[in-house]
Image (cartoon, rainbow, N blue to C red; front, side, top):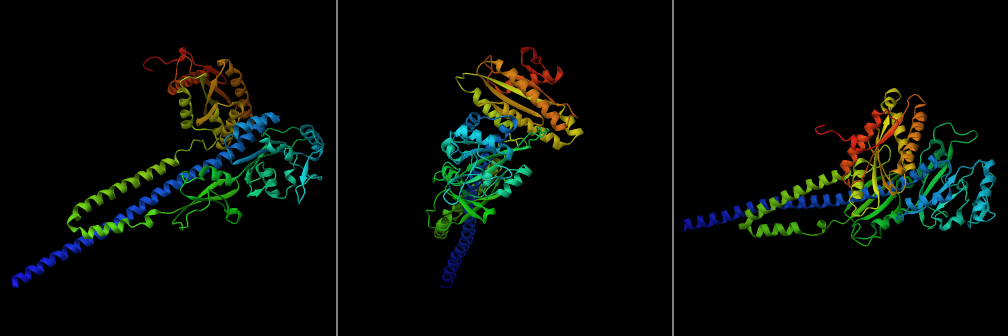
Length: 526
């Protein structure tokens, strides 16, 4: 009887030990499972939030790049016509629904008002010249005398051109101080959200003001260096709803916040439809000229509203005989989750390296250029030959050594602007690095198109080098050109041939160009 009692006590003691061990292990596994699931869920949310913040930043950067391109158009050209402005605008803003309008407001001095008024009257076919909108009612009235005027001269799209052409934005008190500062500092700025009659859509917009100045060479007599403003009207609300408005586009509720305007919410992607309070929030700063914008994303974490881990704990406590198997499977799952976390972290790091733009010049980089050229070469039925032009600046090292790296950077930036100004739709321009640039030209009528272009570029680059260095360093350019003629559809081959041709130009005395020929091919074994 006593032995039976001991056996019973031993049995219950064993049961108790198993229960305690199983409970301890189950509790440990529960904590690890819960933490891993939460960590994975948050990592997935954060990855998606980061991707959408990068996408939003690229969309905003695109708008700034458009204003910079328009500014370059007026900088490199002595006279831009309305037709040229319209053609360029149709190319630059096509497929950009968030861009309400882009217009050119030249700097007009009092003695020039009569001339500009006559030009506007001839364009519009009315007696209206430079005018203001009266308050209230927005009735057009003749602008009073001012120290200078900034009338809207060109507008795209032309939906409301007849309504706003001639409107003096200098007469509008909003952002006057910032406009004057931008004219002095030559730095773009972004306005707060406003409803402006100059917007063809009539929607609330922000305006990106980009000052345009003459090149740094000596301006013509009696003419100021400041030429005017390129102004781009963009609707943040349209951007957010077009890009992220549908649930399949983003499972986040997104807000675009202007911290410089009392943390005002200036755009949302869609109205909140989930009454549950968000449990995940991510803030990402966005770069806009002169403004501090933040993209805020809200999410609803499903893991915080289910009981998967609790049910798992219950199962582990109930089925103690399967504890070893279940623990092994759960630990394996934990390791898989850990590996997925590491993979997500690597993907996030890779996203940071996917920028396609050279930070110094604003041109495309080597990776983007190669992808685009390879895509063109892969077209099965091309109607054009593809030419690759490799450009190397002559004596660039002397600029950095004898002057400063800032002079070198300035020269690279101005060369980039010149390349963009001389190229056409369909051409590609990129910076390889250092003082090397590369261009791709779809040729419709053969190589005869290229020599005039290369000669213009040589003259312009030589002039830019003289302006930047004040004549202390003679800067020129050597070009090497290869084409896809003869069935050459390899980017690597085209690049190698262009490189050979460029070095042939270097060896022939610099400041020239060479087209690849079989005579330039390296010998076997070289």
